[in-house]
Image (spheres, rainbow, N blue to C red):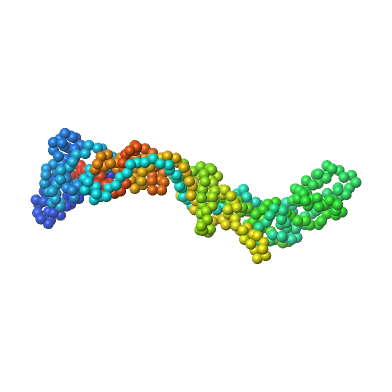
Length: 442
């Protein structure tokens, strides 16, 4: 259909030119244009239905207006130039593209360059944006073990680094106090029942005490009224939900702690790139926040959900060595502090490598992709360029992988392709008798 429309446009141009010539200089040129259009139609009909008649009756075409075709020598009705004999080409093209024959001078003017397809090792580089996220397995909620009143809050600010075993708050809890006193009484009892002692220790651990705290009760006559609750994890306090003097209930969420020594890098990868990505692939990431430094990691998970808006899938990346995302800073007192180079919600640029092995490749400049088909121009002999449909694979740098359509030793055009393609389209353009009738050409 598109080819038909192109033919119609070309004939319309010819007729429009004839009308202009009529206005400027008489009806004889108009009649000549009409006759040329008719001759074009008849010539195309002859080409389609009889190769032998074409050989006996060669066609003549204007070099400036390829839509002007006649079966007799003469002049172009549009520009007045001599019509040139059209050389018959045996090679076949593809829909909307025809073979093109060029002289040595024409090749030089168009700057035609070609090269033989080659086979080489291809490493595909996929680049995509990414964002730092918390390692979801390293995000902790510290809840109240038991109800009670906060007597003292040791960690009172967010963004505070804590270590496992650091005291979080001092609590007075009637339930916890009763459990500790029971243990002290059992320890001081003459019966000293081992089973009851084990049960009592387990009860205190369920209420949040550590083994060291329980052992410290040995030898006491009376349990302490309030006791410290220690942190079960290391990390940074990101959210604090408790204050001095608060009365808390069992199960209340008090802190959210994130271990920033383990982070995820979530990359957005286009659906067309997913076949080349799999767990275990190595990556390199960079960020403007830390210039001149590269971070290394590997793909740990490929999400099997495509975002309908961006047509991308999320790829989870873990860093090979978490020490690379930290740096040491010496404080004013000589103490050593560790700072995080990468933080949640920080943007990064990700490059994923995929070794495709040996592949047939051509320069990207040789490939035409109309959306419906992919093709290149193959130089079959000196000066003869034939469009050939192919199947292209991934693009690697300045090369594109060819999966089907070309054979070893074939030479494809790499420079001057635009002008060559334009000439190929003109060679393939024709008009139809029906369109001449619709225009009212007598």
